[in-house]
Image (cartoon, rainbow, N blue to C red; front, side, top):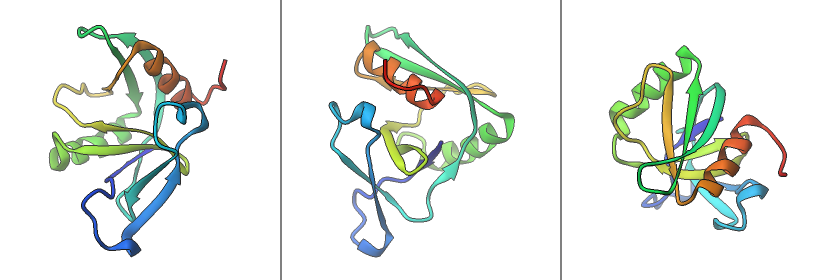
Length: 130
């Protein structure tokens, strides 16, 4: 998986990369997403688990390798509070806002519902639709 800067606000079409949304999430997201060329940072996840959160919606806790967490920490320092695009290969998974509170090996993504969080976790683990 990787994270990248979304195209929103970028006028230069040569810098835009359009990618399809993963099939498992097309029903709840637009069919295409866009990110800025050269902004993707590859991350290696060892696990992704869905859970209800304190707001009665869903969240996905993603466990990264130590090297990937260091790369994400750099992204976090420059993009805190800004929207990023999570990618699986050449497909978009979801837009998310990077927030404080990531541990040394984990970070959390918010989802509108526990059901959507479960789909995102399955996609990140590379499992097929049920």
